[in-house]
Length: 343
Image 1 (cartoon, one colour):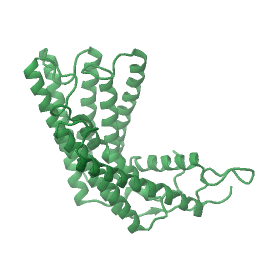
Image 2 (image 1 turned 180 degrees about the vertical axis):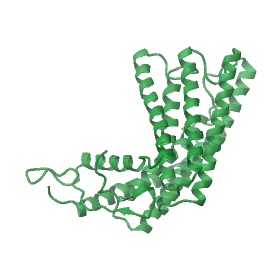
Image 3 (image 1 turned 45 degrees about the vertical axis):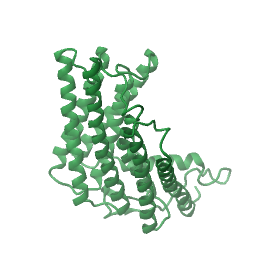
Image 4 (image 1 turned 30 degrees about the vertical axis):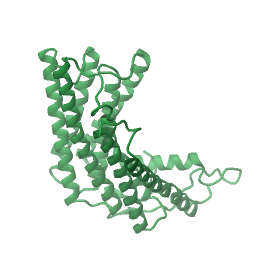
């Protein structure tokens, strides 16, 4: 797996035992050439740090991690199939669904592993992992099966079997949503990680919960279209042009954005309070972007056509997130230079 001893990340996922950066020589090639901290070296170092942070600790986390890995592998395989097979990307029966749903559920499942690393070891870790990981696998498997059968996965009641598949998908999504709510409560009452990690976990899980609410509205909108037309909708919007799927996606993947930032901030030269403030600013920024896109969607407007106040809110949010990552990268460079030694 590699040596991650140069990264400031809590051993076992808590803030009790810390590994501080002592020797980081990414990108140095000795006296014959090269400089400390080349771009490629820094990027590779950050990637290794994030990878180490999502590695499982314990059986329940390992099960959840493998569920996420299978989902991501499925997404990658079906991405290749989509390239070979060709055809449209958008629509009710396309390879987009196995790819997008596999990637989304896989990344969220890995995110849950990171959150669990920050929590106390409890007996209910296994039941949570089984419900969250197992339901995610079943959901994506059903969606993938329907694509291979050449029929829509959502809003399809053409046959009793297809209707049963869609009902089963609804049940598994409810289980994932319930497990997400459980994880949020667990994080609120038994968090053992740093304050920066707490902000990322709680903020990301709240965004995920809101995404679930938007998802129920999407399902309701699809049911209306099917009842009115008798056909499975090829696309879903709120009102005339509301980008409902974009709002849903931003909520789902916010937790990954915040986790990556939290992990990177722990490897910087910033003081503890400065890291926390940076994380808070970035989290507030992401919330602003999320709110702007969601409000625009529910207003029936395309995400490229917000009202002026909402556009300003979104722009401020983008700046907030950008500042957070800029701080994580720039101050990391300072830490690397202070810690580097010749090899």
